[in-house]
Image 1 (cartoon, rainbow, N blue to C red):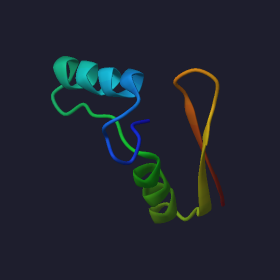
Image 2 (image 1 turned 45 degrees about the vertical axis):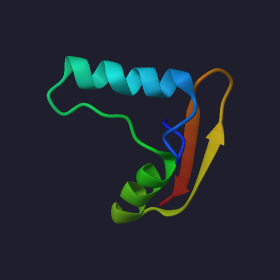
Image 3 (image 1 turned 30 degrees about the vertical axis):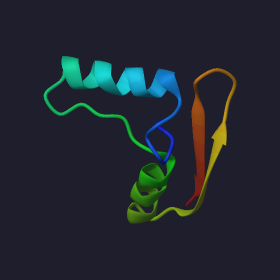
Amino acid sequence: MIVEERREAEMPLLMNLNMLVETPNGFDYTPSQCIQWLHESGFEGGEARELPGPETMVLARK
């Protein structure tokens, strides 16, 4: 996931660029955008955790 400021984390930014090049509407998203979508789907809470490497996990409860 891209960090909130969208200025750091080279791997997610390169992935975002790759998605824009390869798909008509491709994009990557921030943890807060993911949490917002979870809330809209009926989930509660929401927390982003960094995983090893360029990975991020978002946790929420339903």
